[in-house]
Length: 382
Image (cartoon, rainbow, N blue to C red; front, side):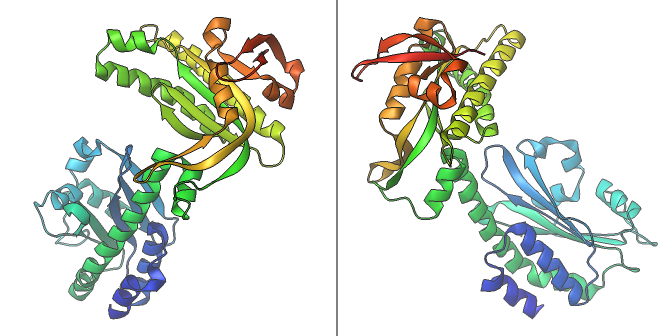
């Protein structure tokens, strides 16, 4: 156990993610002579949709990683489990022999484990930062189950294992929160050190912006809670197609959304992805309105392509990771014309050229606010 404790607290395990850490830990326990067959833990997260990551390791099988949503603590399956008793502080340790005269099958999990050939099950508390409670459990299928010495071995590593999982949980939380609030690519850049004010790079990208229609009327005639629900539905309809087409959502601006599709080799591919995302949004919005006539969603979208500066801008103690540039300004100016033209999707001439003007209808020429000269405005034919 001393070697395992040194490994858990040392540099060799420091860069392992939870799944790899627990796979190696349990293999080391087996190598030390403890007949571990199954291991379980649940690691708290700070994700808005995920309460914990449950990890189930079974010897000879692929490790399972389950993302348990908020609200799961109210489910009967959890309330009937030994996890509930440990997390709520009603028990400090539970051990259930699964075979023989001392067999205890009072929990559904014990019945399931016995049916799979298990002979002994034990579960311990694991405390994370901010006194968030969790558990770790080990199960064996060895005849006779665990020995008392093996149970004590688990206890001896519990403290350092909890600390190690807590550190991994914090790292996971930082990654996840940055991805949720900044987007995947921006999060990676910030974590790699690109977080100084004024830093950034010029990239060539297709741009998609969308804006909710009649938001002022919606705000005036509904409660704040209803407004938030409506915005959430709108952003969900727009975000999913953008992510499906490999776009990066950079910003929710009130009732507007800004996304980019960076050009890798061919502008055609990035522009086509942006166009497909806009068409999917239009389709999903129409479907939503058919299914929810009492809360219809109306929006306008614009597509452009050009050079933008991608990076940090803001005050010393409050930064924003975004894209800025004339191409972004033009996109929002074009979007503001959707209502005038009665269209859901408008594009600049530059964008239409990248895909092929034959796929677009010339709507007209307009002066864009703050931008010199008239600009031809197009709309996709489909």
